[in-house]
Image (cartoon, rainbow, N blue to C red; front, side, top):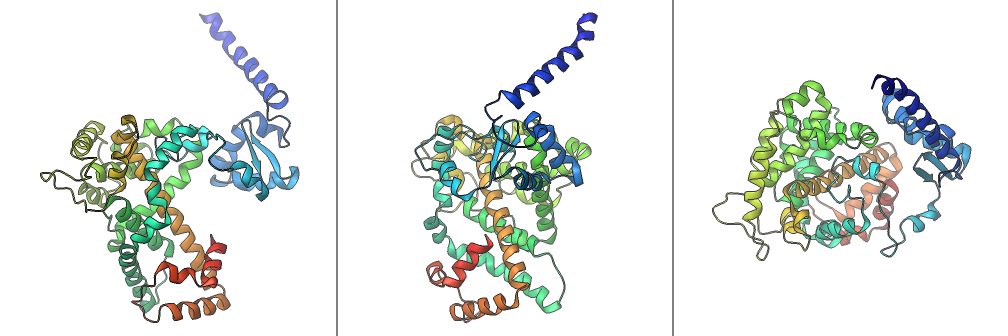
Length: 401
């Protein structure tokens, strides 16, 4: 046994050497240009994304690679990166060809059971079909009155700063608005972020930590299933940043089983107790068993504030998906994917729009003139079709996105 342990480092060194030689010379991607160290090991990506300059720099390193090696670059042992818009039709050719996802990239979101985290092409297509109605333009248009109501709350908050000439971080308000709107849209519920300064700051910190930890999760994709089982008090002691991500998952669980607890979770984000998965499963199972897939209605003895509009939870539960895809944990991960994906991206687009408009007086004047004709009053609520008829507005939003 002792002799074996003495030889173990030598065996590992020989194996690592042979693996590196294989990746550089015989691997199917060996013919593509790029740094040899990137082709040899993923630690190169780890260094730029998790260590150098505080992390998150690998995308800039990829840009540098393209400047040296051209439009096609091997960025890791298993990946190539293409900087050529004409190749888009090859990568996304339509419904015909089969395209499985690269598992580390798919799982870096921390929701491997959601549609975004699904690797298999056919399973992804099945899961996407259950929620595709929520990302269709037609469905979103039917929700316009509710969106307008949250916009009015947003304008109320921004008007306060305009009157007092105080400076503020607009991205926090845009994220709060987008999250409250998407939560209403998906869950018939709301987090009340626009009404509470503390909650929206906590939510901003949570989303920021998700973005910051994403590169780490990509490198060690097995970390999230473990994290979700760790009690909140322990995770808070070990890694407060990771505990914020745990809180995000917990809130989505709570909204599916007992919506009133979501508010309590936001009040004390740094004092979250143990994540009781058994209790969560119990309540989730009770809630799911109360749903009638035929009528999409709830039993009257459950006091859960769902409206008559179908929400994302019931859309999944009443779909043709197999029972295993209707398990509470997977349903919660699916809705969490839609919630964060729909709110964080909207926040970034809105922040970019405000920055470019505010920093370019000519654009600000032209946009104001166009909007004045469509919205003569502050309380005007133009229909989407009316906005789309204005070419300047449409072209402007396309450029900023």
